[in-house]
Image 1 (cartoon, rainbow, N blue to C red):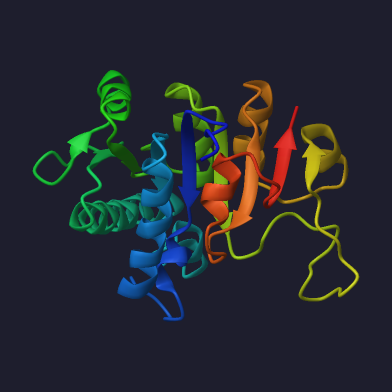
Image 2: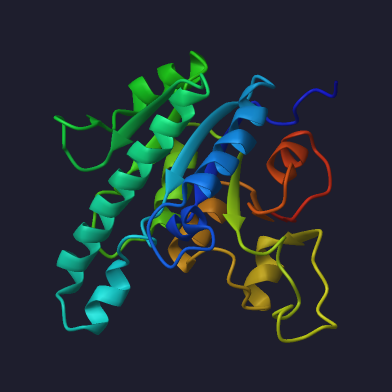
Length: 238
């Protein structure tokens, strides 16, 4: 068996990934598929941190469209990520994959608070650490939380799971001639105005020289192939 290319990764999952074909909420079949993909990588000995969004339950920016205060809406979105993190950790435990949830908001009756040293210890013990509640601050996305936590725990790469299998020259759903980038530099991604992560998260990854790989979570085995160093998705590098 090939040795993993990365020893420690940060996986960014959107809340929408948990919906499957449902309109909202958590689809148990999709949840099981995602957990199976993560376990296949954990079984290689790779240390895994996960940041999860909450868009399947509540999206802060969408709340502001109805006249809600942005900070209030963002805090509600953070609570949605805690719910998703708890569901993900529970599903992992059911397949004998130890997991811990750490929240940037203090909800100690439910999940433990984010403590960097403890998170790193859990990773070294082979536990998956799921980081919930974003950065704990309004006006910052879970993309930024992924870049921040990835930098804090010393991850070697941020893996952003999306609905498409990488970054394209144009929207592949609208332009049949669009081609996928196998690799692209941060500078070229900026010059082409490609929406890889939100601008704050992208700048943090660039400054920390933390590469990003964008891939499809719906493509079976994609996560494992990336970890093994195969050409999958799009690698954004310095």
